[in-house]
Amino acid sequence: MKVTRLECGHYRIPLPVVLSDSTHGEIRHFEIVSVRLADGDGAEGVGYTYTVGRGGAAIHSLIDRDLRDLVVGQDSTRVEQLWQKMWWALHYAGRGGQTSSAISAIDIALWDLNAKRAGLPLWRLLGGNDPRVPCYAGGIDLQFPLDKLLAQTEANLNKGFRAIKMKVGRERLSEDVERVGAMRTQLGADFALMADANMRWTVDQAIAAARALQPQGLVWLEEPIVPDDVAGHARVVAQGGVPIAAGENLHTLYEFKQLIAAGGVTYPEPDVTNCGGVTVFMKVAHLAEAWNLPLTSHGAHDITVHLLAAVPNRSYLEVHGFGLDRYIAAPLAITEGMAVAPERPGHGLEFDWKGLDALRA
Image (cartoon, rainbow, N blue to C red; front, side, top):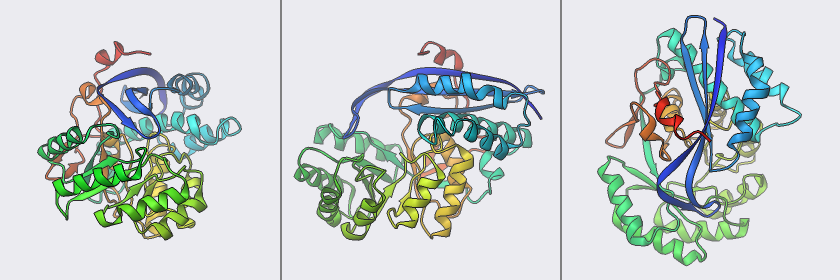
């Protein structure tokens, strides 16, 4: 069935609470770039990508000006062929970055459309391993005072979470150690706790931080250094004594291959909205499986729950909606620490388009 229409939107989503991490500072809004495409029978597929406040206009332009004509009029079931066509059309100008984000939004919409036409939820179409996926609350809370951090944690426990991630990377390592220690005391020895440094440290600083945090029994320490330093990641894994999650800032399959092959990651962490879409996310999942590595995820939990539900090596799904839940018909269901992939055809994500119209960038 041929794609007959592709529409692209760009929105600024204000956050209910100002968030913070070691790289972006205060975060007051996210940007969403959406894709809606339809076939001759009127079936519609939806995809999106996002940015941390800047860069969305460039992604919107890439889709609107450079990718639309490569997709409209083409067979929607030839997803791999369309992916390759988009990749090579923008290869010289892209090879990752905003190009991968633009391709991701379209690729997600194609998979959604094809799953709907098949009458299957996306997780079943992709392999159908287990619809119940362990999940964690992803806090963006570096500058929260300790009492606010602990209050947020209590609220997440009341929402049914059985795993929580907090931010680290404050000015003094002793502050991070104190805050992680306070979280561990509140949660208990066996509760799943992760920490995310958002690329804050040098390699030596990251090794020192990992060793200092080791007694707290973290599930993982996330993004301790810049994503481009593959050899540095391998050093942190080998010398830090704490499992390492990384990958949310990797935008190609080849970057994941290099990091995994170098021994630089314990939990590969692709983001379906910037790594190349469902097509690439699933390739990363299988690559991680071949290396006997558990897979986690970053962002877009309403879509990613399907991808982790499809594979046997999934670990935890990250859950944080960056304010988007207010514009979604049926937000992700969480029961006793498990996110449940819905049985609705496609990925099941339905936006409130009228509500989003008021937020157009």
